[in-house]
Image 1: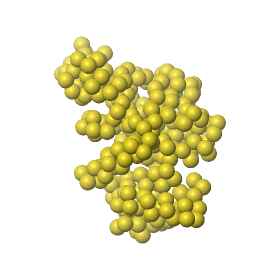
Image 2: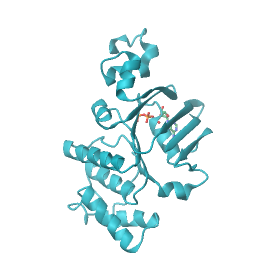
Image 3: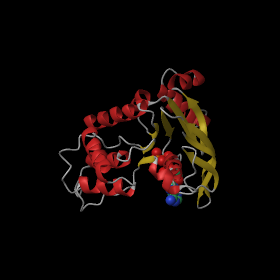
Image 4: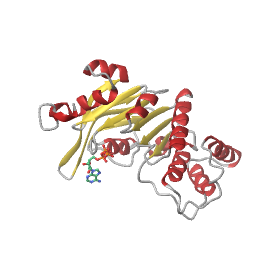
Length: 249
Ligand SMILES: Nc1ncnc2c1ncn2[C@@H]1O[C@H](COP(=O)(O)OP(=O)(O)OP(=O)(O)O)[C@@H](O)[C@H]1O
């Protein structure tokens, strides 16, 4: 389970996360929705231990990343928007490097590499240096890197952004398979069809906090809207309903 407990974070003097609390359950896919700049990436980076909260705590499998960085890294896979590939390495070398850093060696390492190669259909890319890779190719390698050590928890920041139809389908299929194996998956997205297809639970962020949560059906029932997008707009921009952005409704 991933748990975020009363997290507060500001940049310069501007609060971005104010008392943010939620949890993402094991064996479920949880979607984090919010307007541009709502703080989704900031939240995911804090969970990943890449950024420190000013106040509050996060737990990954019951452990705080700040207290147990190594253990949390072992049980967490991260697909973010900022990681670079080492362009001089081939995909095989790059993944081998990360798997070794996670403590895999020998046969276990070889088997882990073969597994992601097959699952993510990486054969054509396997022995290519990553320099010049397309966005979709880079995303596939990032996903392989996140999965190679078989983490129990996976966080993904807009994972299908820039992917073509087949690559996005492969990613969704992979997430659903991981869910069926009991993984905890938390991802951010702006694509409602994808959120509907994948998510057991949806969290809507606005003003640095969760303003709505539940299954897509529950959110629709709570807001009285007929589809998830309308429900999201109502929850995330609700206070603007009477203002100049009323055309969104
Ligand atoms: N390192 C930083 N320094 C200053 N401001 C930052 C920093 N990182 C993020 N911010 C600001 O914090 C706010 C939240 O950013 P964040 O990237 O978390 O939003 P997001 O919900 O992921 O947005 P998007 O949907 O556009 O990706 C934005 O206003 C952003 O400009």
